[in-house]
Length: 215
Image (tube, rainbow, N blue to C red; front, side, top):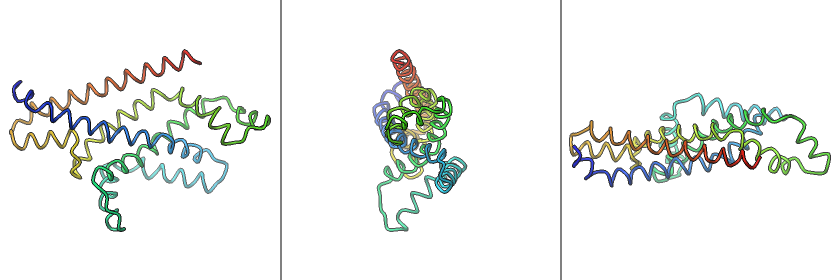
């Protein structure tokens, strides 16, 4: 058993690296767009608020596997041919935008009201006030929730194997198909996921403590 794991561990770690890449890019792209959607959800403009809420409802209310398959098969139909990995990143990004927006909204509601109005009274423009006053406070408040969302996206990234993205789960399936040893391979994959998630949680706690000291 150990020889099997040892022989296949390098390629599984390569797959884990692809998992981290796909998930990381989606989370990074989703953060600024999630903030924009958060302000859209809380906007005083009715049309913008409704549009933002509909977006959230669609992407939070449908399975991520369905979203992934729709994007993967829809893009070629409208003349856009992209590699499977790009389709996977796009689907995960559009999904996490909706969830991150709700996380940021929770942080925004926890900030005492009136700060933005006070900033505008001293000549700070609305978006500048959001950028320099609200956003830093929101990020400090929502770090634990962002870490949880990152872990969720990382676990959901295993679904991108259905469109032939060679991440950890896809690599594991390929190894099982040639070795006929599913137990050892999938247990190893599970351990790799656990280690990655533990490291993410550790990094999140360190970032939270660092920001707390600066506050």
